[in-house]
Structure formats: structure tokens, C-alpha cells
Image (tube, rainbow, N blue to C red; front, side, top):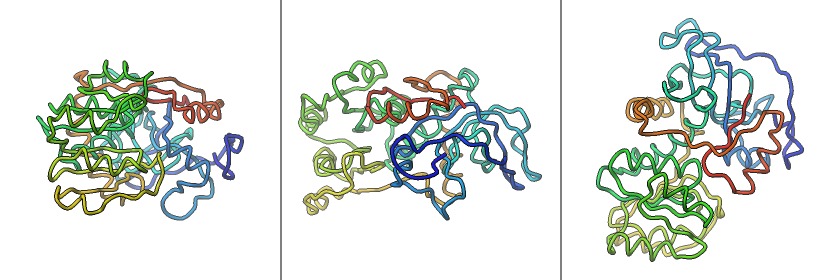
Length: 322
């Protein structure tokens, strides 16, 4: 939990009372969770959970585990079912409570302890690229941080729907993006992604940009965009503020969409989750999609996991065994 904000030394393990599921809720006994950039920001007091400040601030936006108990109105799940899902916080606890329609069945060919690497990044990528970005078969996408959790999920989703995808990454992550099936890989330490995308699209631009960087990337993203294209902003790792030529949006009739899953109303979260269940979950059972796991840590070593994520060395997800 996070008793106060600061560096990794503020993190501590603590015994807390078990949560109780409401009538339409499920209590899950958590087997694993996974790191997200949001966990680092939350630890530093820069990403508060939506709503009133909780009595005990527990990080963790995703989990996998087994159903331990159910509310009186729950119909979709039974005790012992293997499930995974996203939450606004608390995923790094031994037990978590969530709405029954926010859960997903763990794919048959994915180990329960590995399934925690799926929900947050695949839902984020699917919602950004497909639901909000309107990416379809034959379309083209540009995704920054191609070797991140969202990036590796985006590559697989684009391939699965028949779209083409360009990604940016550092030199040591180029091979990983290539193995996952990216069509164009731009090593941002050596090349200008605007120039590379222009050549790749023969000057036409991409249909959608999924950006977790922000900052100075905004203006360059707009240059990469085709007429009536969309920029989906899901993070600001490169800085929350920038300036760019606003008039450049107009001739392209472009859309700039900021989005986050965590703070949406429960109805919108359920809608995104159910669309994910219907459209993507079967692809895990088929083997078309798979979680990309970089490393795993014990919950007791959570500080080390934070330091490792801060180093930006991971390709795919960092799992936390609960």
C-alpha cells in the first residue's frame, strides 16, 4: 500500500480487513497483478484514484485470480472460476472486489498467473485503436513506445484485424517489435519517425496515432496523420504541456482525443470490457493474441519492480506475484 507519497521506500505491506462484495459484485482471490506507469505516478501522488481518497491506498490496475465469493445477484460467475480484470486501484492486494460484468474469463491456453498481463494493456490498446480510433482492416496506425505493454498489445491487435502498424522504440527493443509483427519499426534514437512514416505511407499518412508520450510528439503526430485521422492520447510520459500550430488541425480535419479508462463511469467501463470480451478474448483462446511478459517479482519485492519500470528496460509487462 501507499501510506504516503514519495520514492519506492514509502511502499509497505500491511494486513487489512477483507473487502465484502455487494449484490452485483464478485470477490476475487488475487494470484497476480501487473505494473503500469500509473503505479509509479500514484506512488508519487500524481495519479490519485477517482472519487474520495480511500482509507487505504492500494495500487494495481489489473489482476488475475479465482472467484472467492459472490454477491446475491451475481449470475455470471461461480466460486473457483479463474478470472482477470481491471480495477481503479487495489489490484496488488490479496483480495479485490469488482462488478461482475467487469470480469473476464482467463483464456484456456494462458496460465492464471500470466493472465494479469492481459487486461489493462489489451483493453487500453483495443479501446484506443479500434473503438475510438476507428482502425479497421487495411488501415494504418502509428503507436509510440512499441515495446511497452500497450505497444506490444497494439502490434498484435493491428495484425489480428488486418491493419498495418508502425511503432517507435529504442535500439535494444527493435528486434522484439519485429518479432511481434510490426510493419515499420522506427528507432527514435537514429531516425525521425515523421520522415519514416511519410515514406511508409507514400505521403498519405496514418489513420490513427496512439501516443503515450505527449510533449513535443503532438505536433509531429499531426504531421503523420492523414486527412480525418485521429490522435488518441493515452499518456504524457514526455511531458504534460507543449505548444504546436493549432491551425494544422484544420486542413486535415483531424481529431485529438484524450482518454483514460480508470476514471470513466462504471457503465462506460462495462461497455469497454464487454466489447473486449466479445471481440478480443476469443483471439487469446485461438492463440492469435498472447500476453507479453518481461519479468515477474514477488509482492515483497515491489520496490524493485518500481525501480525496474522506472529504468524503462522492460519489453512487455512486469508481473507481480501476489
